[in-house]
Length: 173
Image (cartoon, rainbow, N blue to C red; front, side, top):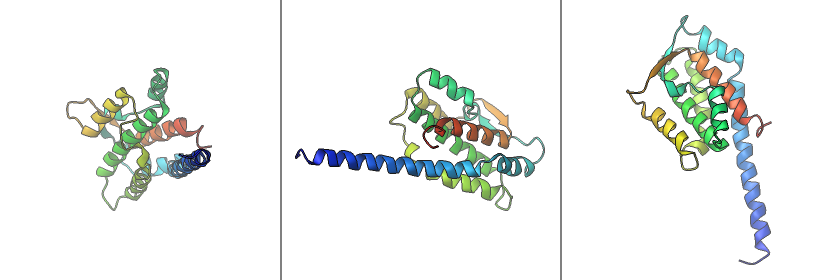
């Protein structure tokens, strides 16, 4: 390779990385707009019967405290984002599975699922820590032996929004 091409290739690589980050931030911003408190309250609480719960695996209840604990164990940010993406994709699918197509919240959850589909960067486990991959594999397998927990749909999306803010607030201002 000629010496004059190296800076050019570096510049192109940096531009490509910057474009990918901007695209990811655009999707995160759209998710943030969809996951406002008012919309979560309306679609996940008011449109469901009182005290309605969805049965999810224990690992699918991903809270800010879980992320903080994993950060303290030096789990990388891409791994944490991979975990957040996969857990919440499954949560949304479980919420949508209990809704009829005519239900007022069905279209809302469908829109959230479509936004999550656009975050294709987090579909493979190659760059993630082993512990995170194991948790994600357990969530994706829907293992019947896993402990179950009854959680309100709004609480699941509250956790999704809080963890998203925690993971992306620095990189997507």
